[in-house]
Every structure is written in C-alpha cells, then in structure tokens.
Image (cartoon, rainbow, N blue to C red; front, side, top):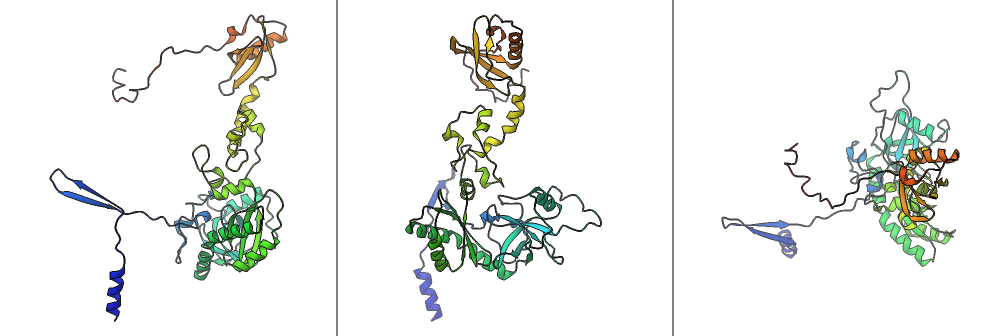
Length: 403
C-alpha cells in the first residue's frame, strides 16, 4: 500500500519545465542546450535588524550579526588598544533592535559578551531580544556624549545570552510584523483615522508590539488599540514618528541615485534650514531641495561648514562698485574659485567675472574717493575655444609615443 501511494504521488506531481531554454550549435555540428532556471528571492525580515539572513538555531557569534548589513552599525576605534591593567571592564553594552532603535544595558558580572551576540534583555513587560553592537570603552564615550547617567540603579539589565527557545520565539514574532502592519492599516482605514501606520516591531517574547505611525493632526486611536489587542492578542503601544523617521524606515533612492542616507548610515537627524541653501548659492526651489520625506534634504548640511569657512574672506554682496563708467552691482559668486560677477546698472545683461582680490582693490579705492576707469580692466582673463574639440582618441594606447 505504501509503495502504491508513493507511486501515485510521484505520477501526479507536476514536472518542472525550465522557463527559458537556449540551443547553441558548435562549428563541428554538435549542439548544446543550456537551461536557465529562475532565481527565487526569499524575503529577509531580519534585514532591518542588521542580519543578512535569519538567525540560525545554533548560532555562535557568526559574522551574520556583526559589522555586515546593519544600517546603524558602530565602528570600535579602540578595539586594537589593550585595556589598562587593573581597570575593570566597562559593564554596559549597546544593543540594537529594529531599524534605528538602540539602548544601553548593564551586564551581570558572570556574563561575558562579544559584539554580535544575541541577548535577552529587560523589557516592560517581559524580555526583548537584541544584538550587541558595541562594548568596552567606546560605550563609555558614547554615554558621555549623550549625557547618559550610568550610576542609576533603575538601568535595564541583560538577562542572558539568547537560548534556543528565545530565538525560536523571536523568529516567529518577527515573521508576523509585515502581515500585522498591512492588517492594521486596513483596520485604521475602516475606522476613518487620518493616520498612516509605517512599521510594526514585535517584542522578542511576542507579548508586545510597537506600531509606528505618522499623522498631521492629533489622532484618537483608543478604539484602534482595542481592536488591535483583540486581533493580535498582544499588548499594543503606539508611537508617532516624523516624516524623516518614516523615510528612514521605508528606504528608497534619492535624487543622487544612491540609497537614502537616513536608511543607510545616519543615526540622528539635524535640523536643516533654507540658510544652508542660501550660503551654498542654491536656488530656493522646493522640488529640488526637498527629499522623499518632503523636508529639506539632509545633504544640505554636509558642506555647509565648508562654505561658511570659504565665505569669510569674501566681501559683502550688497556693496556696489563705483567706476567712471558707472556703478556695478553684484550678481553671483563662485565661492571656491574666488570669483564674483558684477554688471553695470545701465547694462544688466553684461556679466563681468572679477577675482575677489581685484574686488577688494576696487573697494579700497572707492573708500579713498578714487574711481577706476572701468571694471573691464580688472576682469578675469579666460581662454575661449573657437572650435569644437572632440574627445575621441584620448584613450588611445599610442597617445604617449610622441612625448
């Protein structure tokens, strides 16, 4: 009977046929066939927790959990410096969770941890599962930078390294996050709430779920919490986040063609003002200066301080240059080339490029009451190419033979 059932299953199983088949013919007359099978990409729910693959049940501090795919990983600059003799090891570690959520926990004296260990930490209620991302003296400097009080007794603790049952429950909870998010969006839409649920994070022991949402106005979600608690049988916590945090969690590509900075390496957000765009001589066009979050791009702050240092030696743009031919007003400035463009009041279409040193000389002469003949005498000389030059042949291998 078993053989008949096995034979029936094998005969009814559909035969897998490759989607694409290519036949090539050799010069000798023989033919070869190549079969191309489609590659199935399985989703990885642990990518947002810095794991390039789901954790295995027999993990031993593998490279899967350390300095590989974590968006907010930290580099230990003191890892090659030996500890001071007689000084106790710092007993606080930094543990990362989903996306940008990190926290600090005190380690018991009888527990030794390394970067990449999966640990069970104190939570309210129950326990949570996280990955150790920093330890040692670097944690001390981080806490000093954030003005974190380490002497308090109410600091959360690390319970233990994650056991097999802890990891099994953690994996099962993480796999529910995507379906829970879509289901909660449908419930919020049915209730007519003006809010958007962006992300869901389950606690490691599967007893609590954090719902991250964005909303323009205040939202009364008391009825939503009751329905979610009955639907998913867990404790519900609602956290409102801003537009920048939403973009960092969802991810995407920026106008530069690269992945968003907030979803790859940025760990905190600094305020961006239109003054940064003005200093960098950028046009105040909201469509070009705004990112996917609808706010000003964070990259406007990257070179802001460099521009501030560069414009210290530049004269004010509101000062007019006086000559015998007439007064000239400032039009634009190339900060790093130290060049300023001026035009006469009676001829605004004619721009004159004048080096900053010459502009300062003209201003000094104007203070003394002297008027130069014209600005053309101080203009920057540029070579004009009358004919089009093609770049073809520049990569020729014999281009250095005659030199």
